[in-house]
Image 1 (cartoon, helix red, strand yellow):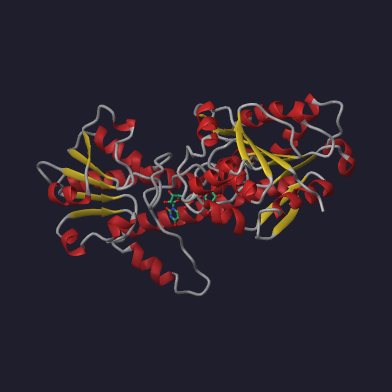
Image 2 (cartoon, protein in one colour; image 1 turned 60 degrees about the vertical axis):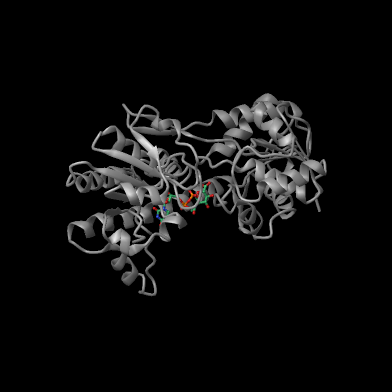
Length: 418
Ligand code: SAJ
């Protein structure tokens, strides 16, 4: 059994920090590395710079126990786990979407001087197919004195594997431990070593494959969701045209034992599902027709909902529109890549009337609304002042609103809660 006395996690964000904290809680020494000095200082004080339930408690415990420390400079370790962002770059002229691997390249350059024979390097970041091979090539370029799996296979001095993260924001600590993991080594030895690392903190099964399949598995999971949400979104627009209640329709269709339609909404937000399918499309544009079309359907949905809200508000002399929710999904405060926020902003920019933002998870409007005629309001204030309601997020506070009172208002309900 391989022993890991010290693990280094590169990138202390939404995935890296919880992963570092969970491994440290198993008694392994963990060094977290991040270029953000403020994040590093915050963690070393036992605090967190990201919002995730219970993460603060675990980080405080492992920092106090001296099992986790953060730094801006890489150190030697037995295993390195890379959890840096892999955003995509849009070339609007060429209509091309490409993955930006520069953070992985920087991480490779940072850890390469620290590598020693027997070390394991795992890429956790969601990546296009081939990224793990690229990572290994960057490491090999910086360390010609060591043997890497692309040339030495099982005999390599350094083992390299891909193990994509697949945790759901809001449930990260539980899913990190309970979810099954796909582990794709660049050789059998690489996979074996990576399994030993993950077995130290994962209760789910560790499923072995090669690096390319592991990369594609993660992209496939998120594309599956995207395509299926697009199907629901398309159904909602068809139903609207044919005067059918899409929620009733889906409920009925889902009573078929082999049908399970997802929920329509105002579009797809977050940093994963709306991004990852493009990695497949850009790698195989001729073949990935359905995946591209799904992205386009989901990206068009906010504009469709915006038009519906505008039409509804237009019947009033003085429209006062309450936008219920601007987060990217229910019961979180995360506003990044949020279709609800985009719709609210476009609505405010259209100057059609007064816009009230009802978002129980924040206490200050984000800078996206600077200079616009938008106010943050409570549910009660909105019920008092607004004549038009746009339900953009299915937060629990909205589900508790009085349906009889709501029936008296003009409501565009993109989440089907009323
Ligand atoms: N949404 C719908 N209808 C649905 C389900 C979701 O419109 O039926 C919308 C949500 O409102 C939201 C977006 O899709 O705007 C994404 O929400 P989500 O909860 O489905 O997923 P994320 O982005 O929070 O996390 C996903 C997860 N992937 C899958 O469920 C396949 C998570 O497991 C991944 O780890 C994460 O992406 C990631 O990092 O890739």
